[in-house]
Image 1 (spheres, rainbow, N blue to C red):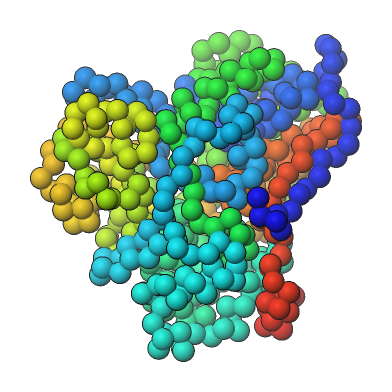
Image 2 (spheres, rainbow, N blue to C red):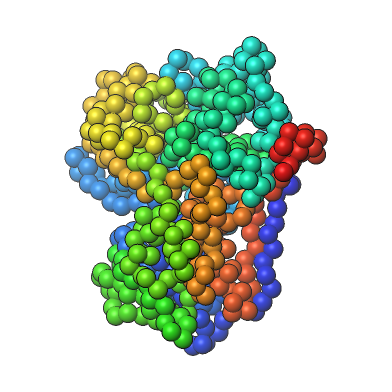
Length: 512
């Protein structure tokens, strides 16, 4: 772990709630945030019921079986996700069933390629800032001397001392695109590196808050010594992550109800809640002492609209104001011949139309590798983020396949044995000026807490790590109500790493 990582200590209290008087909690949503909250509560003896509307756990990391044209049964999912080393709280959740994290495996590099032939990577870049930034610029073809001479270092200095929430006071009013324009980042570097990163938030840089971009740089590059290399799952998400965790939750006494959407949450006059659910095995309405809502923005908005007793007017306006990022497409292709052996497991792209990255799961995921070995083929996955609202699905699918054949010419001769395409629009949007209106973990209704990657945590976390962190924070908030011991958390450093750069950032206005 980074020697400057920050520990957020657990609040003291009793180790466990015991017996029939133990609190009862409903967790609505079985993604990372909901699974984390359920785990954190059940470990303290709280009686938890987890409701998930889909048949599978995992939320955006769920997987489900599908049968290919050749008769093979395989797992389809939303595909490639990177488990970075600075995802301390997510990795702590996974260690509950895999202490050595043996179900993850590392990839050698995080290469980025532009349509004009330029390519960058991070394998040779030192992990510790600011050496990481200096080395990346020195090794990259995207930073030419005349471009560097045009840059405005003063405008860039605040990126080296990111603090939450101060970074939002400074930069939430401007877009990521406009802030990079103000810095005069070289266009090549902006397209190849920074837009690849910003689009991992499923948003066009012109719509993404510059504060979120700055936070992202801090978490992954400028504030953490963990580096930009990462790990991936050795097997599909259900087998590697969620099936073992669900079994552990049942052993802890939690009830896991998949295929069970929650229709309404009602606040009881004397305190507590009634949860009305539908679907297989739901049963009648049930009463709980507390509720965790761990939902994506659209689902949270819908449930709040169906539950008029939740929150006050201001809270309901915050929830109603949550926005969803533009749609994205995942195409997984099963090909009848292999890709070249030197193709990376993951490749970020720019300048290839709608294509944002290519991964080769048959190079690192066991199920895909076994299919490829048996058939002599390959499994390839294509992602397109932040698509226009009016984008045509079939046209985009064809565009991604054409981009793959341009990137990896050997695939032009390959027959597509089968394909699965996933078109979704359910990720949070972090727009310019939106931070102050985002809801927090705690709400105005006693016993009601929120979790998810759209929720403000007050900590420097993002994406999957934000979901896991918010789940722990939601559980800790409830445990504190009942005098039970909380769970300690970790984050990347909560300010810039270097005193000199912090001083310079303050002079440039970054310390306000």
